[in-house]
Image 1 (cartoon, rainbow, N blue to C red):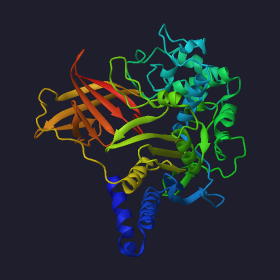
Image 2: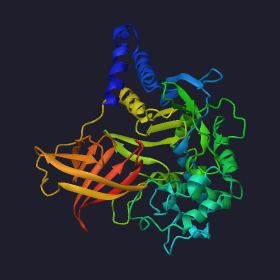
Image 3: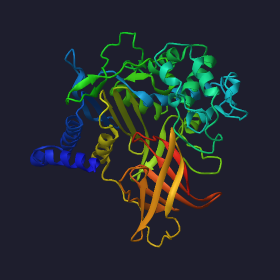
Image 4: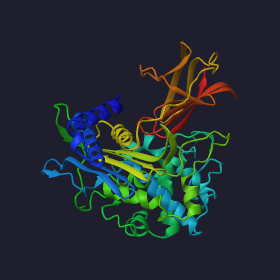
Amino acid sequence: MRHTLYLLMALTSVTAPATSQTPAARLGAALDSAARWHYATARLAGLSVLVMRGDDTLLVGHYGMADLEHGVPVGPGTVFSLGSTSKQFTAVAIHQLAEQGRLDLDADVRRYLPELDTHGRTIPVWRLLDHTSGLAEYTGLPAFGPLSALTLPRDTIVRLISREPLVFEPGTEMIYNNSGFFLAALIVARVSGQSFESYLTDRIFKPLGMNDSRYCDDRTLVPHRARGYQNGRDGGFVNAGSINHTWPYGAGSICGSTRDLARWNFALHGGKVLGPTAYRRFITPRPLVDGSAIRYASGLAVHEAHGRQTIEHGGAITGFYSMTYFYPDRATVITVAQNSQARPPAFLADSLATLVLGPPVDAGSAAGVFLEGLEGRYVGRRRGGTMTATVSVVRGNLRIQLGSDSTLIAPTYQDNDTWVAGTRRFRLVRSGPNGPELRVDLLWRLGDIYSHLRLRRQ
């Protein structure tokens, strides 16, 4: 619904003057209107948006304030904390070292981190990069709360992960997990012989001219850095809590601008970062051990939604959100960063994509699909707990309710017992090892971001 509202607002704003504008000007005005509507209605402190199609810059939009206390507006070089958008940089560093022959992606992670206890399981390095390792997620462990305010050696996290049992057998599930990227950054430092922070600067940011990008460090003076905000109870803003960037590390500690993210996407997907073989391995999701397809490769979600091939990732970290889509078939990048944790920017990015690429393509018809026997309550693991789903059939159409959310999802049939609703994908396995299963693929909308959940009928 929000997606539709953004689009309607954008189109409405340009209807009157459309006859006197070129198509490019009308498109730019519509993109700007959608961004302004998101900025105003989400109550954001500041917002930066960049949309490019090939060599054409369709929108460079900066709205609101980077620093409210000093009256500094958002500008082209405003530096935002990117949160989990950082994961792709960690993954690229691992693949670069593998391409150089200095690291084996298929080797057990203990070759590089012998102190990590994997409880007798073999976990190849590449499984750290697609959330299938099964290792405990350190940010969700009770012990991490008090530890996160302290500055301690990073091997503290290795010990913390090691003492926890595996959440699942490696490769059998995909549940969003920051631990893999924290450990991957440690591997980059050990194999390269330099700190993870300096590796990124020397091997990625400087060579690509990403002058606004760096490892976040609250102690370092960073030109044009935005401050993070949260909405206050009185309708205004309050400063977001401080972050000790010892701990997000390879999972979420990069800062940068939207113009750098656009530059990065065109370089990465244009063959300027990895060679063809390394890039193909980097960008190709691997199935789970039972053959189930997932939609996440190395630090990036790679999928097709609304008939469009999409490579994406979002990020959330105290006071900040970010979202970047790259459409390889159309050479189009959409990147959004905001210094308020209000409405997630994916809703805006979806609307911008519709304006640039056209309306979403409807999925197929469920006519003739046998639905009886699939109804019921399904339960399975999720990030930090349990997820439930209630499946029902209403007048011959599938309906799904997730958890305690009262919203009844009406997915559209795709094929092979698979239904889609936006970026969510549901596949009903009629005869799993323990009876019917519901596979739920979730992409960036917060919550169980980038997960492939297996729910079993009770």
